[in-house]
Image (cartoon, rainbow, N blue to C red; front, top):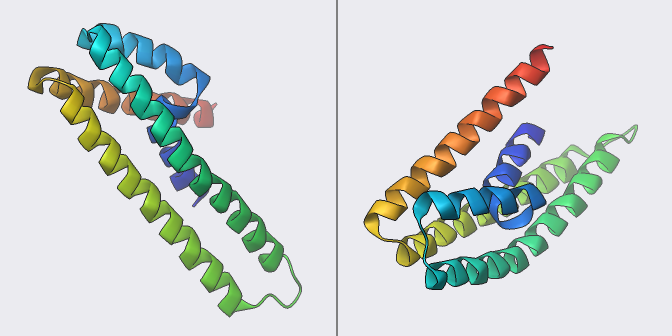
Length: 138
């Protein structure tokens, strides 16, 4: 489950992390965005940040509750299952948010730019996964 959360963080990284700002800058150059497209990307980033921050806060709260319950001597299995199900619902909300974000990005870009955007994001994720595997093997 922790690995899955890491994947979500990576996917949403273009909207949230400082390192994503550099990635966005590289992406903007790669895609050849004009000033209007850059502004729309910035607006989308701000909208998504607000929307997702609530979900990430809820996920953190749920993980704490899950670990607290699991750590009890007589852990309540039904409660653990309930918390795990709610974590799943929150991840579903993140996935749906990602879909909405991609749909909005598609409205901002030309078809050629969008194809390059998808390629850029897939390669970025692939490179991250390869670096992560190498780190684990050391």
